[in-house]
Amino acid sequence: MRRTVLVALAAVLAVGAPACASSDSSSNSDAASSTRATSAAASGPTASAPVCRAADDVRASLSDLQGIDVVQQGTAAVQQAFTQVKSDLAALSDAARGQHAEQVQQVKTDTDAVQAALDQATANPNAQTVGAVATAGRTLVQDTQALLAAVSSSC
Image (cartoon, rainbow, N blue to C red):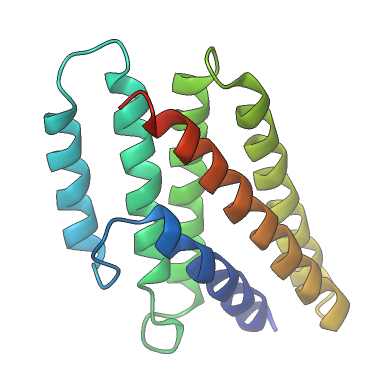
């Protein structure tokens, strides 16, 4: 059932990820990692460069998550990708906290809610707990999109 929970998370985040991801939605991990390096270099040394790099990293990690084939790569790949999304969201939160404190707090709350729903669904897998993962994931995607849109105005 853990596989079902992670598949549900991957599906929810993949649906919202295209709006956050780069224009190449078929990128794999190598291409997304390359995008991170290229985007970081292109940001240049400005006051908003750390925020822009962090936003690019979030887009790339969401793209990585979206590109996972759970059947081929397994649930461990989904968990690893979600861990990277959380890490990149934390970095974006740190970089954007001063300018976008309210949205940053909301994304942190959403990330915690997805993790709590995942933990609950893993411990007690049923339709209700898996549905809670989907709901929390959709909220996280929506609020992440709003934060990315807000920070992109300074990039």
